[in-house]
Picture 1 (tube, helix red, strand yellow):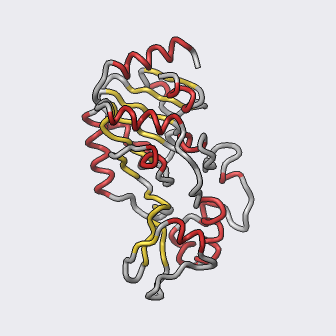
Picture 2 (cartoon, rainbow, N blue to C red):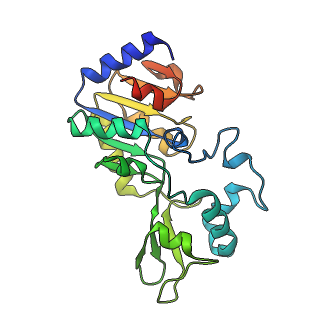
Length: 239
């Protein structure tokens, strides 16, 4: 992280009251939640099946017990706390500078930090619904269950997360497109921008203040107006 990059970022943020933040797994890793695609993330660990297979709709329906074993073990992280990036974004929203947080994460940490306008592209582990009657169950209920979680009506309970082979919520996507399209500043943090359709959202940005914040290079660095490399928590702490 160069001080000149940080100064430029600070100036961009200070001068804007129409910021939109688009974030990925790197925002949550600093709260202790494992990344899916980093070199030591979920995708590089060994299970009976690859995580990509386990986290598919087909696998969920065919082998729900195996799905929930992985889900509880690796994805249902309920004790994590917001880090400085989450907290700074919530602060900017309270100040009227930030209009929306668009996130690929499913942990609810932005809301825990106080953010109100959060668009969850991939859902949340904090919401779970009976596939038969629609009754709601929270994350703690899911963690306490053994085997396949069942509703009082007997139906299987499904996490409100978007699995492989499932479509993103069109309403959430459309709202994200609108916020990005109207943004003065688009901050993109903690994502390598390789997962579609989410990564394609930044194509709707029409401004000239596209800022990419990540530990490693992303697929869109050349298109950015500013690239800041480093820990997103440390970078936001300095703003």
